[in-house]
Image (cartoon, rainbow, N blue to C red; front, side):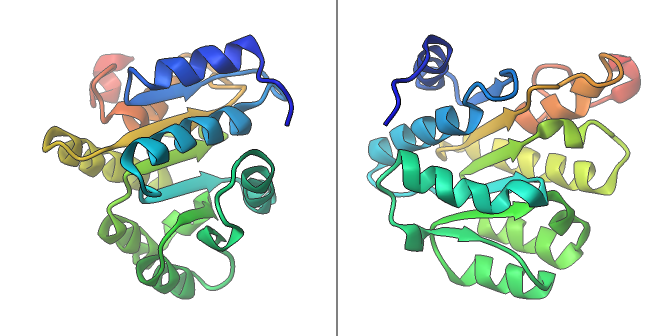
Length: 198
């Protein structure tokens, strides 16, 4: 296994002190490896795999399974890449345990969105989080709702962690970070009013 770079080690240490973290590393500098190391720490602390869902572009969904195999000892049977009909994905999510990886467009389905809320994720990872920059987009609004419910559970003492991963958090203007940070911390950093933020 390759040695961790210094920026990865710093992020892993920081994640032990703060519950939510944005990994805005350049492309090819180990965001997924860093995230897996952070998740391993959480799982070891709690002596179980926390309810984890990872949203990613469809092209890299299966890559997450390979990365877990490469950088962790988590059994392959515990890592589920969700493809196919949305209704079956929702049913599978609610009837199995482990780490789930799916694409952002699954959130367009109300069935899948409701399944995620019922699943009550303890860890949410948004890979290529700049895909959530559009604050009026349906999937962004649903992701923010998931995050807000997680924030409510965190206030009650639940182990809740949220992570953003992207090398390009700002594509057009500073406005691009507003909805990403709403997903990251439920509005704690920039508030929940886009127009006030602007």
